[in-house]
Length: 228
Image (cartoon, rainbow, N blue to C red; front, top):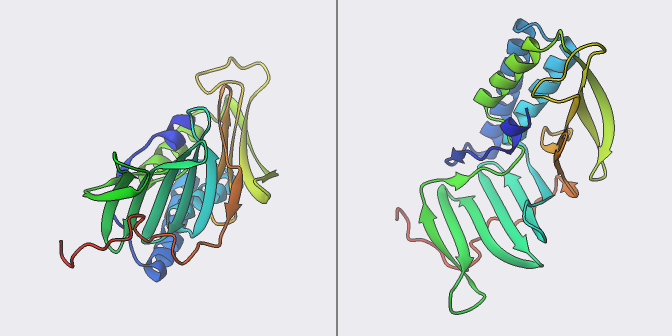
């Protein structure tokens, strides 16, 4: 399950904020219904529906990145998204979707200022479930219901009361590739805050729903020509 969360996918720009909210409602209902059809219990299906909302939610979240001393800071306010990579307190890269454009911004070789270039797509931040990933997760859980128990619990993650799906290997069952236990936690808005599966762990260190007005401004202070 963890691979479904951590895997990066390419995505283009999304809907405007109102449309994104409506889209989130529809996707949540669809995912929950599909999970019930797959044979999952109502509380588990409801949790998967919550995860579906994360794609269209507004939030700011900070994760430790894989490399020592690095962090990811993600601002999400559909259709805009910003993913900032910070190493030892210095921004080393910004992936930005704003005004219908996708940009990659990196320090200029001649100095510390960031310069931005247009790109066709950005790397999705960790913790975003697309529809296909949620379908795969539902099927995986349903297929392993005889071997694992599924419980919904509340844990505090990054200062937030998060809803969590906790999977535990049933007594007398042999451990599969999922391991003996696993946890996925989401904020009330559906943003993934924690994924814990054995040696693989991703946990947010900060989370909030306030996004700065200038969060999606180009870091280099320039603007593309209209239609470019």
